[in-house]
Amino acid sequence: MKFTRTEIPEVVICEPNVFGDDRGYFTETFRQDKLEDFIGYTIGFCQDNESKSTFGVLRGLHYQLPPHAQTKLVRVITGKVLDVAVDIRKGSPTFGKHVAVELTGENNKQLLVPRGFAHGFVVLSEEATFAYKVDNYYSPECDRGIDFKEEQLGIDWGLKVEEMKLSEKDRKQPSFENAEYFHFEKDLY
Image 1 (cartoon, rainbow, N blue to C red):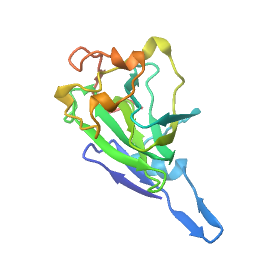
Image 2: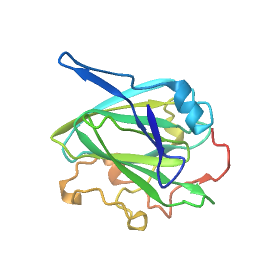
Image 3: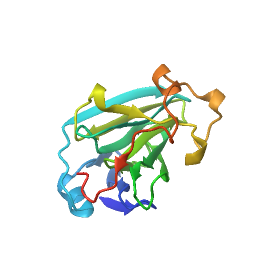
């Protein structure tokens, strides 16, 4: 497995090795020991989630506040999405900056989105199956979000807003300026 730090070093692209032949392929999609060796801290993933969405569906930008903050390891099983992680750690040198990575069923890339980041994705293919691991359970009282079209963030989602399909929740997310942030600390893990 190959790990690559992005422009925001805490956000990591994970690329598993895929071994294929005329019968199909085999890949190890997750190795906790190798990931932890690379990032330098322990992750206790406790839940796997999966969603299926059609073209233009945008889910995000979501996060959970402490004590139920989540690290996510996200991937696409089929289809193509643009996946985005936004640094919302007040005081961080990369506060308000984002990383955008195209994840597809073909490129097998995964994105590690640590605690202290808002996360979202938009489907760029006819449909996509999206899967992710989290290290904390869903907590409605800690659930938060940020308006995906926030100009201050400068995210190019690759689609016009008119092409996007949003939940009622995502239509009403606060601006970046009015969002609740994390406080930048070395140890959010």
